[in-house]
Length: 130
View 1 (cartoon, rainbow, N blue to C red):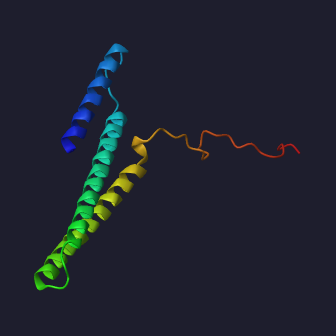
View 2 (tube, rainbow, N blue to C red):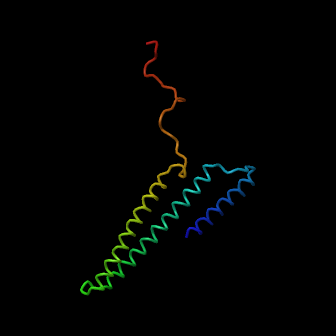
View 3 (cartoon, rainbow, N blue to C red):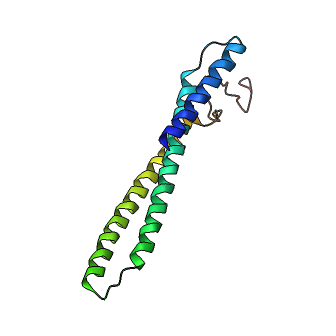
């Protein structure tokens, strides 16, 4: 799956280069490269979360097949439960990574700041001559 997203990333980068050359703009900004990189990482992480979730569901169904009444079944159930717990931890870690990447504002659309900066002039309410 990582190879697929890496291939898509390279294709998008190639399209951008070709498009830039057609428009007499022969460079790609660092921000655009970071944007593609973070969006690729985000989608790879989401696919890993989905894969871990599917494996966890498979293990939960497999665990139902073993009986708790005999010793061998109980041991198998406890082993499967240990793997399920590890999958839960992996999914939690991957979700935190996806959340971090998605909140990284550099790869999202540009947003204008609404805060006043030094270029804004401060309008007074009353004229100074009053």
